[in-house]
Length: 297
Image (tube, rainbow, N blue to C red; front, side, top):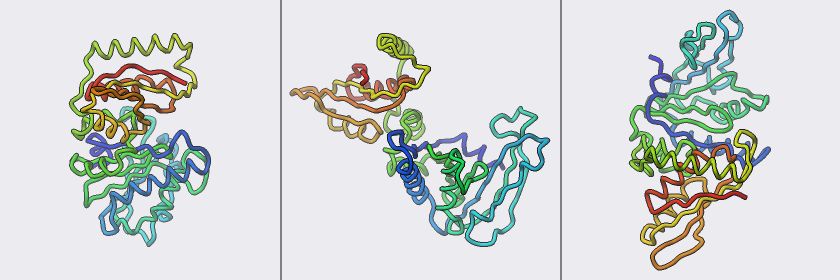
């Protein structure tokens, strides 16, 4: 059985670890803090875990498959299994392949701080380094944990009910880019709020016109403070504010009348990502009231 392949086709949550508004050691510390917190929410010391380490390389390069695993564990390793798989990112690619090592241990036997730091260092040329992609499958809870680098981690399960406690516990850390899809998988938040084809067409047309008016090239680096505007009936205002506050957008009331509240929700991000932002924000507007466009600073 290919655990990774099976699990990654089911319900998931993607968490944001590294924050764009932080740099240097502050960025690194926050990323590791979040990773450790999420890990501890999933694994208990006596849980049965399959530790999976994968590297991909050209089939003709036999030396590329070597890796040191014992450094990730507190005690002597039990039997380690190894196998060659089709290239995990494109099984039809005959030039590349993926080598997998796996070992069954108790969660308490894993050197978790060292492991997470090694993954964190992947893109920074620092030691320790993971030397590949690492997946931790909690057999006891049927949850797969995969921190892919300093930016984020994915949590998968074949049963969405196993993910719901994690969804509620760390909802604010869910990557906004994937939030709408995740809500749909889990039947929470924006689940059931649908954008019609005509609404999508009009939204994207508005975005293109707005970007053109601003003279911004969406294909270049263009970090902006993007503010979205809403008009929400007063009876829904508190619930709207609560739900937006569980994203990484900053929500603010700017005007209240007897029957309506005007809100803003703001986030600093590349304007090239305006499509997902306006989709997400317009769905919140549709759920609670109306969405009235965006501006930048």
